[in-house]
Image (cartoon, rainbow, N blue to C red; front, side):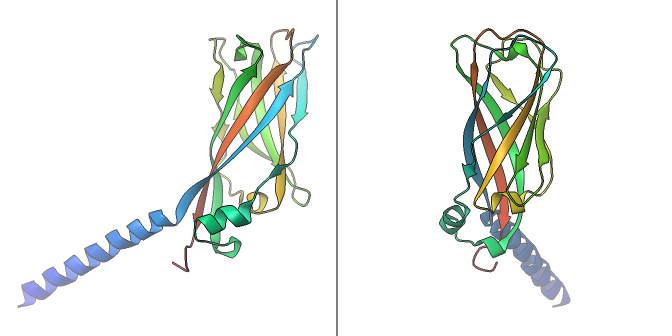
Length: 179
């Protein structure tokens, strides 16, 4: 009888832990934001160039609502992935770029470095995945909007303006319906 009670208790505990992990996964989702920046044709190299995106509207209220949660239930938001893709001119690659850093800012919060790539190889890449910070960006993303500043250093002359698409994926950990 004792063995049966121990077996049932172990089963209930295991099922409970498994269910909690499944429920926790239901409270996590991604938010995607896109923007663009133009690197102007330059006459110099190895000079830091700062570029700003237009304000990016977060629509956080509707995004959170679509995922059955609210701002006050969000526990953390982290940058999961940040990719850059050359949109134009045709045939342009990231060979001209030595390094890049991206910073996030709101009207009420200070600038924070969120992604970077240094020593970019001259290998004909037209897309680039940046390294990302592990910092909690909840206060930045839950606001009405944010801007990104891009700091680039080129190691080749750029003869034409280069349009770059910025694709960011933020991981959200929130409680859903109080779970």
